[in-house]
Image 1 (tube, helix red, strand yellow):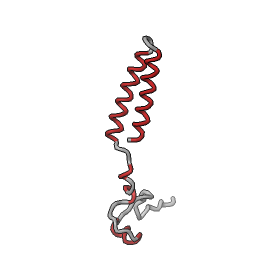
Image 2 (spheres, one colour):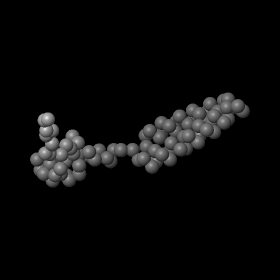
Image 3 (spheres, helix red, strand yellow):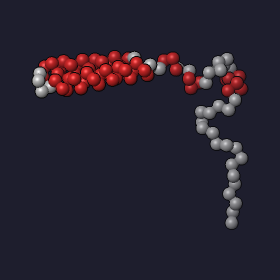
Image 4 (tube, helix red, strand yellow):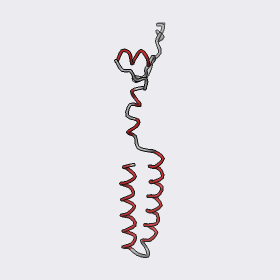
Length: 91
């Protein structure tokens, strides 16, 4: 019966960095920030995105609730909710 050879080194994810200081010295960068977080400041604000999303959902519920009573007003409210959705994506 053939013996299975065990791995002697751990298998790491492709993007893992064992020694960040050495990595930055080799790459010639002075930053100790991992390269994955380089564009973090450009990320949208999750808190405001969630708040605006809840407001948009509330406006949509109101808009659909108005449909049986006034179709034009309901359409205006639903269009307004779409404008809020655009703002939501810009936050």
